[in-house]
Image (cartoon, rainbow, N blue to C red; front, side, top):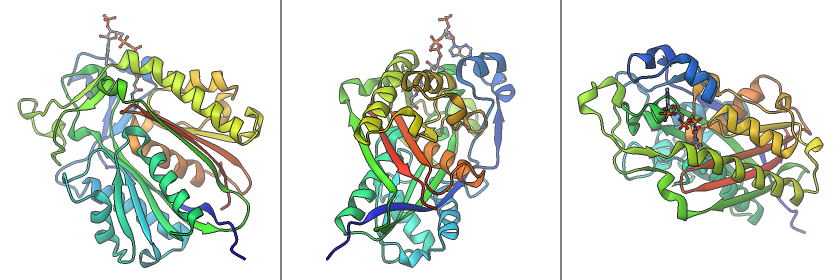
Length: 333
Ligand code: UT7
């Protein structure tokens, strides 16, 4: 008899650009202060990719993926699926996933991208989890990557102080044993697409390094309206995920949320009744890396020893689309 397959994360990895851009550095670019940025967002510094280093969306993804594969003890040719959540591919096409497939020599995988703003990683993880449960996939790579420096308006102090670059990856494998991804919950509402959008382009060279006059002004955000909606959406989908699993907030050992703003995370944690001591944050170091923020945080939490077998982890995201989602995992590494 066929056993029910479950999707288990068996390896995690992250990669960020070398260049650190501090709040103090931003004081020279826009009318802002370190004090304002820390108080309103919790961010102290972020990573920005450089044209003279190999830090494209593909490079960052491939590096994070290699670390996740190494931890998992999986060879790239064992992958049968690569799904990447990103809105800042190096090319309009082909997909970043196909470029990463080449970089890894993952010749046996089907590879494609998912565009869901900051929720891209959770959307991609959901697709892989479903494919594993259906038996169409055994071993998959899921990446969240963004290089928002390529679309930031570096004159807009409301956004350029928040957004940044990075990649996170997980290897997911089917196994009938208990645990793994217990449930995934995804939502979208296109009515609010214009609260956060980029009108064009994904030039590789980060605008900040090209001189102000050449900057592409693509990214638009209504921060204040998004802020309120983010708290509502994150709180309600986290509650949906808890209810679906008959969990109370006490059953969650660690929340790994999208790292947009510490005040959003605190408000959500308060709404769902989980103390900040059980919420992982690293946005003070990396800013908002969009689709990369959850897998990057998951990798740091994992390598810091905060995740061990049997722990229940709540992933929760919100982003452009609007899109939002949550997933509950029973850690099985
Ligand atoms: O990844 C998912 C999508 N993104 C988000 O979820 C982001 C959601 N939004 C936010 O995180 C917050 O709304 C921001 C951090 C963007 C802004 O914080 P806020 O508390 O909502 O501030 P605000 O937009 O209401 O602006 C307050 C003031 C304004 O000045 P006035 O009009 O009161 O004189 C802004 O012009 O702060 C000003 N301001 C700044 N001042 C110094 C905006 N950005 C800056 C800045 N430095 N960088």
